[in-house]
Structure formats: structure tokens, C-alpha cells
Length: 499
Figure: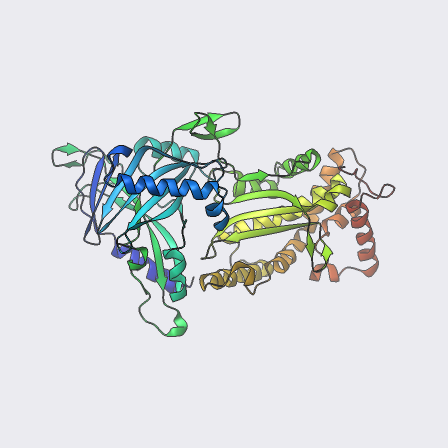
């Protein structure tokens, strides 16, 4: 998004922040753009639209069990259950929302909610998954206070073909969630969480809620001066989706921190998922992700920490590319706005059947760096003004990808070459990767020299400029060493085959 568009978005958000509030213990009322917003927590059998909501929840359950909903949105909704013990009901303008706690087998974070929003035009409810990517400490705070203070990482996904998809054809449209902080009086300056606010004879804290919706910016190529093509109407019956986190109960076990699931057990959100059954390969993956260096620490930061918002999945399969086999591949998915949603590393079945442990180790390191670069690009960890020229080019390529996704171009039809630019950046890390390979081989008891380790570090980078600058004889020797390990050549390979 250009700086001009960002300014437009901020001006739009600021225009919505005019509030008054009227609250008691579990019910809040504020003004959103001169429209009242009332929020309360109620029991399921007391909700005003009980029959309609029961029917909607039943429909979601049927579609999840038939895999239709999960398949259409690349979501792993196995073991989905929607709890109705506590429901957040929000009314505003001519619409309302219901927010439910959602549990599933492999949750991505501590708080995941199903939000149903009434569409006054159709008389139906639109369905959304809202995820709060927060730390465990923040989760405990929210579950205790009922407030989300500050602008945290909140993501909304429309579970049905609806406003977010239909809007993209009009211009630059994207989902956004804003934490609205509400003091307890228009004439007071109470901070969120302040308990000293007295209103209508009560002593209630200031509070927060989430306002999520689609923002559409006019295409500069069209010469439009008004950046907002549809100021809220596209969300169906109001100014977007108003909700608040509906939390479970925090817990902790030997696997880590989590929340109490529907069966009473402690469910730990998983960001790094290993679907490979081979114990040798699994051990190597675990070793790579626990290395005490920049790569290992970066992987845990990106995919293994409390604040991670992207799942990384390892799996094996039959890989063919351009008519030939490949050792491994890193793929990613994004939503219609180019926001990163998942990363998958696939190792070739043929490769892991013959390769040595050293070869698989260097391949996992290589693919992990791909995954980490995608994460850094998505979180602006690699920017266009980076002093390293190669990373500058990579960041620019990512910007082009996001721009094309915002224009509605499908993920697999974008005209960018991220892999090539990542390989160019990776070629500057050959020495570091070689040291990691040597340290791993030495820990396994193998006798390996620096030359062999660096040769293996070049695997997958043979199309880079750096590789082309190597002496011809060195390139040929490096190729032989790479082949010995990838095929488990019994006499000349340093490592041992996994299988």
C-alpha cells in the first residue's frame, strides 16, 4: 500500500473515533460515527434471535464435517466445536453480531472466535473467523479483564463468499481490524482500564472492542479523488463487524501454555506442525528448529512463539517441477489482500528415501530460510530501504506480489519471482549455512571439512549469480559432493542415509 493510501486509511479510522458511553456491569453502550453500539454478554438461550442462530450454527457444523467450508478457505477446521456457554451480543445501526468461542484440533492462537453478523439487506447472517494473535500473558489479561488494550494483531476471515471478496473488484480493498478504546465519558480523560470512572451511579471501567471491516481505496490510475469507494455499505447492514474477544480459560501443561478445551484438557496452540512420520527426518527438523543461532531463533520467533500468526507445516510428497524431480519446496498462501496466512515445506518422498542425514539437514535449513524470509517480508522485517541491495530487490518483489493480490490476481497467477530473489539473498549466507552443516555433522560423529560443508551449503543455489562466479572446477566438485549426499552414495558420502 502506498503512503498516500495509508494516510487515507488513518483519516478514515480517526473519523470513527467519536464516543460517548453508558455502561453497567456487563453491558456497554458507545457512539460509533453517531450510531449507538451496545454490547453485552448473555446466556445462549436468552439471545434475541435464538432460532436463526441455532440454524446457522447447525449449518456451519454440517459444512465443516463435510469438509466444504474448510477446503474452500485452506483452514484446518478438524475437531471444530462452537461453545454457547457465553455469547457476546452487540447491536449497532440496523445490525448486530454474535460472538462465540471456537475450539478446534489445531488452533493457531489462544483466542479464536466465530462471529455471526446480521445482514439487514438479505436477512441472513454472514460468518467470520476472528483470531487474536497475542502472547499468553496478554491472553490471561484479556480473560481476566475482558479488555484488549492497544492495537494487537487481529485477523478476520470471511467464511462465506461475501463482502471481502465482492469488494475487491471495485478497487484496492482489504480487511482491517481496529481496537476501539472507549473512556467512560465524553468529558472525561479516563484511560482504558481505569476503574475510577463514575457514570450513572456506578463505578465501571473504560473498555475496548474490535471494529473490523473492509476498506476500499480508489485506484490512482482511475484518477479518483475519493479514496473510499464504499464506506461501510459493503459489509452488509452497517459499518463493519463489531466484536470483542470471547475467551476460554488459560492453562498450562508439559507441552506449553494454552486454553481449556471442550473436553477439559489443555489445548496448546500449534504454529509448527510436522506431518512427516519418518522418525529420522522428524529428528532432523527438530534439531534445525532448536539450533542456537540466528536461523533457529528466527524460526522460533516466526512460527513457535506466542505472537506467531502463521502456521508452518512440514510434510512429504511426490514433487515434480518442470518435468524433473526436486528435493524440496516451500509454498505459501495468502488472503485476497496479500496477507500471509500459511507456509508449507514439502520434502520429496524419493529424496528422503535415499538422502543422508547431512543432506536432509542442509535441505531443511535451506527451506527454513525461505519460510523465515516470507515471514520477514510479511512483517516488514525485510524492507525496500534495507541497506543490502539483494534484500531491497526481494522486498520490492514482495511489494509487487501484494499489490497484484490486492488487485484480485490469484496467488498462482502473480507475475513475481520471489524464489529467485530469495536464492540471491541466500547466496550471501553460504558461509553461515556451511558452518551450521559442519557443526551438525560433527555432533553426529562425522569427519567433515570446511570445503565439503560449504559445497553442501550451495545446494539449491546453483542458479544464482554467486554460483556462476565460482571457478568451473570448484562448481563441478561441489556438484559431486551435493549428489553424493542427496543419493546416499555409500563410498563417498559423509553422512548416513536416513532410511
